[in-house]
Amino acid sequence: MKLTIRDLSFYYGSHTILDNVSMEVPEGSLTAVTGPSGEGKSTLLSIVNRLWSADEGARAEGSAKARFAHGEVDLLSPGLNLPSLRRKAAMVFQAPTPLPFTIFKNASLPLSFAGIKNKDEVRRLVERALTRAGLWEEVKDRLHTPATHLSGGQQQRLALARALVTEPEILLLDEPTSALDPQSRDHIEAQLLALKGHCTILLVSHSEAQVARLADRVYRLTGGQLALCTESRATP
Ligand SMILES: Nc1ncnc2c1ncn2[C@@H]1O[C@H](COP(=O)(O)OP(=O)(O)OP(=O)(O)O)[C@@H](O)[C@H]1O
Image (cartoon, rainbow, N blue to C red; front, side, top):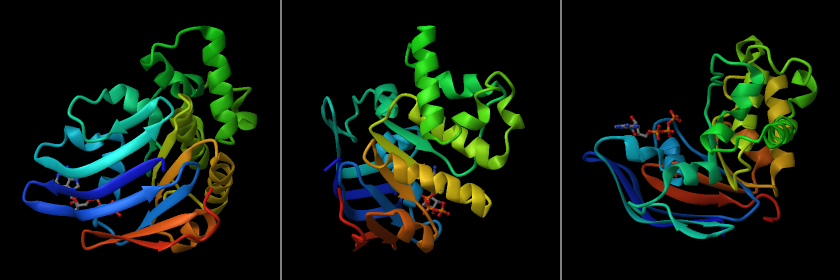
């Protein structure tokens, strides 16, 4: 398993968000978490890249482990190297958020944070990420124009490229198509299906139809409880 969560409880102050939940995410799968609004789906994603650590009053108990290429990581360990974790478990949020820079700089920023400065290497990794996000052909001749000039669907694929540029082992997707028109959504979904196997994908989605189209394994989160609903296809 790429991710193994066991008997995990999560609290914001005295408010219990996750109540003793367990989950297994197979390597190379696309595993979806669905359920009503406000039940803790984003919180569950934040366990994996430790985004919750920044929130005052947030507390986790139990066990959450990821098996990366270099070995197993305890995702709740206080001493975890967060920049390193976030390169291996990268996140795409609901609304595309290009920074006020060029397309190239938006896609390459995580590389400069990771200390990768060799120009040829940066260019190669950016091209690969934009290709995997299904955006390369549309932007290759205007890489040095502002990212804010891209359409919403292109901006979301750029956000996907930015997450992919450090070649993460786990991709965390929080409602990545909910702000998009059907055509842009279809475009992203096609890229996600192509990405399976290259990395393990954990997708939060409200859309039962989307989950049915994409997921190998589906969990439903409600009332703080997480239930395995389906393993719709042969899990890799
Ligand atoms: N930083 C925080 N401090 C306190 N409470 C929070 C914080 N972040 C989220 N919550 C609360 O935790 C609960 C779960 O939120 P979360 O965003 O994980 O739900 P969700 O299922 O992803 O919702 P949605 O589908 O609407 O995005 C909500 O009641 C929310 O108000």
